[in-house]
Image (cartoon, rainbow, N blue to C red; front, top):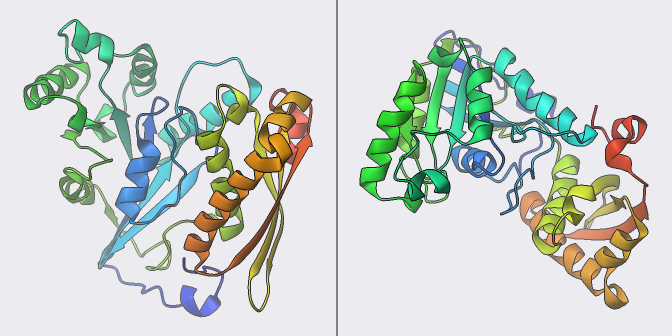
Length: 319
């Protein structure tokens, strides 16, 4: 992965008036495939993905630059109804995106109950209905993306597009499969039409605005989501306490914060086996990201009820 704090690199940005840019927000209910789509569009893993909903907690930029165009995608947490303080804050990130972008991508996915009734999106999922209400008056600057079309027959895709078109005057409706990379070229081609003339905001080799340190912590959190069951991953936060580049390796130390002692025991596992597996898998991902040998240490700490505490959330960088 490229480094972005080198002044020599940043000075290479060409101030060309023919360049076009745009900030595009990616919104949708949890597990709609936003992070998978972002990684595919950028061409590199910049946002973690798991089979569990509500994996994304932070706003992450993914930057795609092609010759004279630069598209800055903003990946957001899934929008959903919640009473939890942590979830209320991360949903607020997503809702704010609607006001701060040049264009929005609203990802919707097949709603199993609709298909069982043969409705094909004539009825929206309740959380999609909530997003539709939020988009009121903004439909003309919203591209509706029907994702996961690999999970339904072609005739259902066409019928779903026709039904979705009735919900608002959207700029476009584009069917894709982020997982299979289906129709992504058409999506990019369409998005370029909405870019405005402006010099590039970022260096043309930059793919995200977050640091390698941040991504290292995210890869550890991704492994926690992949390996732990039920509610435990949602009660976990990762703090990167050390990120030190040395001659032969990069030393990284992370603290995994949990809310209860019982969760700490599960993450560590019998004789430390679970924590070791999480560490090994995380280290391999981080080495792939950094292109260098990594020495990773993980420690587990109980921070009682951190997801419900304003001060703890601020300490963890969620404010």
